[in-house]
Image 1 (cartoon, rainbow, N blue to C red):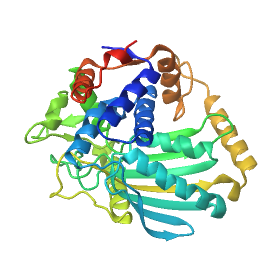
Image 2 (image 1 turned 90 degrees about the horizontal axis):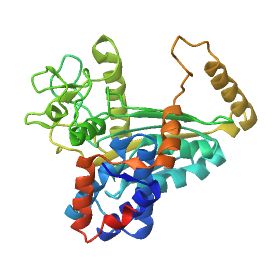
Image 3 (image 1 turned 120 degrees about the vertical axis):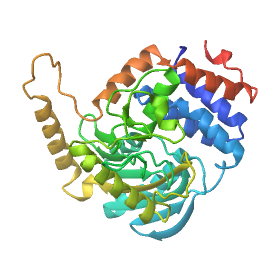
Image 4 (image 1 turned 30 degrees about the vertical axis):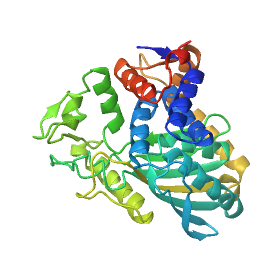
Length: 353
């Protein structure tokens, strides 16, 4: 299992994307995003995606370069079509249009349809916090990726449909970013490529039986991922259903439907930005938000608990470690990346120094 510095891994990713015909500026955006996901411990949204993205680009399912098309706009909203461009690129183009609207009016919302996989939502929450904004966002798989079965069901009906909030404080932002299923599909994919079992309670096989075999999700017929939450997952599935409805319907894209191909190609998305200075004021917001997070951290702890962890803390802890020690790439993932690079005359060895 090779260990690569984040700088070298970013350069390797950029070289592969450029060899696949992606312009340098777009290669930089998507590569930094993927490696940041690895740095933060979310390998499911990291460089494991390089072979998938490149395959989609070379088959014509994704397009680069391509413009972002705005088809509806008001002073407070933008509805955009990504034209099946690279998801991270099109997302930042949309956010760059939303931010000045939010700074002028206090709130702005945007939707994005027909875009490639946009990556880890927490990245955009961190971006919003740096701009003194609160962010809410969600995505679905544009009608595909139906991996999550309803409570009592054995067939996937909706995608994993994450929900994300980012809240700035005077210190580190609170970043709540989680799938409405027990786990993201990419985490099952990571386990499969590592040749490892998955925890009990993640996946059902095609007959509806619990399994620890990640490959059961990708069998024919496929298994399904369980929704999160107690009471058989009704809360998680309910949230996932609403996120699917918002992302697909508001954007003019697609909600989960049976005639869409599996696996999914990309996302429909919804973003809402709130400028903290326009409501209670920046000073008040940052003060009260910081006071609350510090109050929570000051809680007496149970035996064996070293600290109280808030949303966003695990990612910052892993990032500090991996920035120092490098990023471990599982052998299965590295093999696919190396094959993708070699086919495009990119030598991986020069990036291992």
